[in-house]
Length: 191
Ligand code: S6P
Ligand code: ZN
Image 1 (cartoon, rainbow, N blue to C red):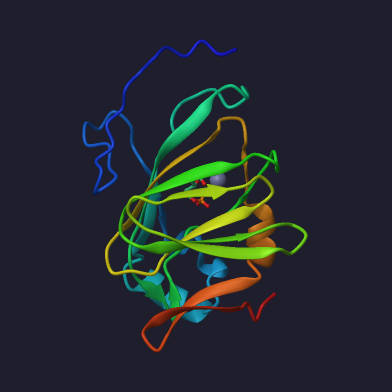
Image 2 (cartoon, rainbow, N blue to C red):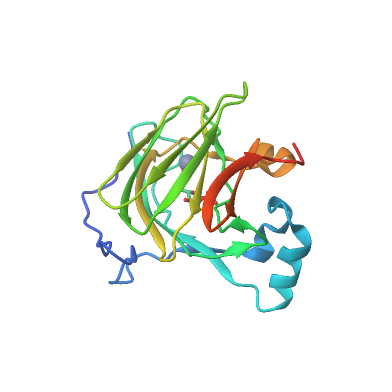
């Protein structure tokens, strides 16, 4: 068991930021995930045009090898599109595949796109006051389908680990795009 002492952290309920600055978020820009977007040409043009920030998320300095630890923080995903595809997170499986995760919507509106290695696919809308359960084995990607930052609090088993490789190689089976001004879930033509 790890020797972590009790502590308190502040996360703003609307912005999602730790306003005291006790912890710092990791940032991902379009340049960090050009190949993950269906329209890579549009992604490259955005990189050249200033490389916008897609999202920020907190990871705490907690032991990563202890199944008793809970990792937690917020994800702040900005609104926007690359081509017709909404801004999204990279998405990942947990390395310990059967570990689950809880997300709680604080502000903004979006979707969680999920799939299993066996090819089950699901997506759920998430907004303020809604708790979303991502079961073990389900890869998860957050997508901002709204016009404000999508802010969610998350908790997962601290030794779960992140497997990004599978998604980076093959992508998701589905994409979330804007059609007629509304979000639509379509087949990924690259799959
Ligand atoms: C970790 C949890 C979140 C994501 C964050 C960024 O298990 O799901 O903290 O790390 O939303 O997404 P990604 O796919 O870049 O890690
Ligand atoms: Zn996760």
